[in-house]
Amino acid sequence: MTTTAPPSWAELVEDLTAEGVLGEPWRAAFLAVPREVFIPEVIWRRDGDDLVALHRAEDPQEWLRRAYGPRYVITQVDDGSPAGPDGRGRVPTSSASRPDIVALMLQAGQVQPGMRVLEIGTGTGYTAALLAHYLGASNVTTIEVDPLLAARAQAALATAGYGEVTVLTGDGAHGHPAGAPFDRVLPTAAAPRVPYAWVAQTRPGGLVVTPWGSAYKPAGLLSLSVNSDGTATGGLINTTISFMELRDQRTPRPEITEVVRDTDIPEVSDTDLHASYVGNDDAPFAVALQVSDCHVEYVAATDDDGHWCVWFLDPRSRSWARFDYHPGTRRWPVHQFGPRRLWDEITTAYHRWEQLGRPAATRWQFTITPHGQHVSLA
Ligand SMILES: C[S@@+](CC[C@H](N)C(=O)[O-])C[C@H]1O[C@@H](n2cnc3c(N)ncnc32)[C@H](O)[C@@H]1O
Image 1 (tube, protein in one colour):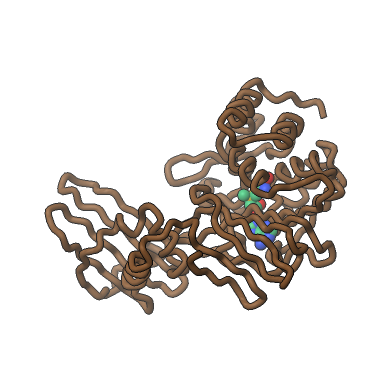
Image 2 (cartoon, protein in one colour):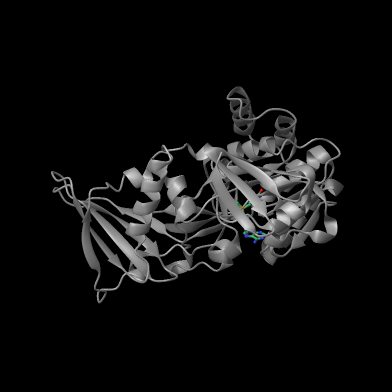
């Protein structure tokens, strides 16, 4: 490959190394694999609530700055069909992940020479290339649900000299039984419920290291050791990362107006539980484990009276709740509508977490069996 990374990339690599985020062998891989080969000509940047296209040909400096920058690079919106007006996008659906998070995930995978690795969520192919650089391309298999992204990643891998990586198109939730067993399964899309196929296709003693998250709390990196009885156990080793969800486990992120209608007649009550308590520290993990399919939307005060609100939205059942904060009082109104009472569910989950002694997110023990995902306190 003839591309040369700008000096800022070497600086970023050195910074990540100095911070202890990036060590060998991944530091060498970061310096060797040309990241720009994996970044498409059109990337997306935020503009208010929208995403707008940034063409390399139109602004090569900015494109290069982002391709080799410390942030994640949005490489696809709305599953490839921009849903906003004038070609604008609404939701990122593929990206080149943040370099520090790529480093974190690779290191958490404890990959050793000779291992065979299955990556779920090829995206740009960049992570697969880093793995291929270290392990040899023939030891790396990667699955991408989107055929166009898979084809683009395969071409980029070939251009960068890693053409022997096996790139498959399909639903990575099923893994790749024909290639099993793997030593590591490393998904790069979040799984609220870890598919058992990933465990079944990892040899005993191997690891599944996956982003974990839900609509309520889209954050966390889960490391699971596969046991000889075919189950896997582990917990969260990071609670600050955020990832897009596996396509089939996605809860569509709704606009408030998509769920709430003027004609809805909500049930009104009041609460002494401040909404910030259910959104801070380790509480959101406990709530996320108990309350599925619930998006949170904070709406800041728009006037001087200090009133703000938080919406809780489940587009599937068209249930919603709204907590209204008013200063100078200890009880706040709650409106709830739909088949689910979302605020009641959240309150129950929060109080359960309190009764358990407010455990840290890292204390939840995940067990994955053929029958599903079970979570208890370690
Ligand atoms: C954060 S991006 C992956 C970043 C990627 N590892 C890289 O290095 O560029 C997540 C990717 O997972 C893909 N994805 C989502 N659901 C999937 C599924 N069920 N099976 C396979 N890929 C999936 C998305 O299309 C997206 O490209």
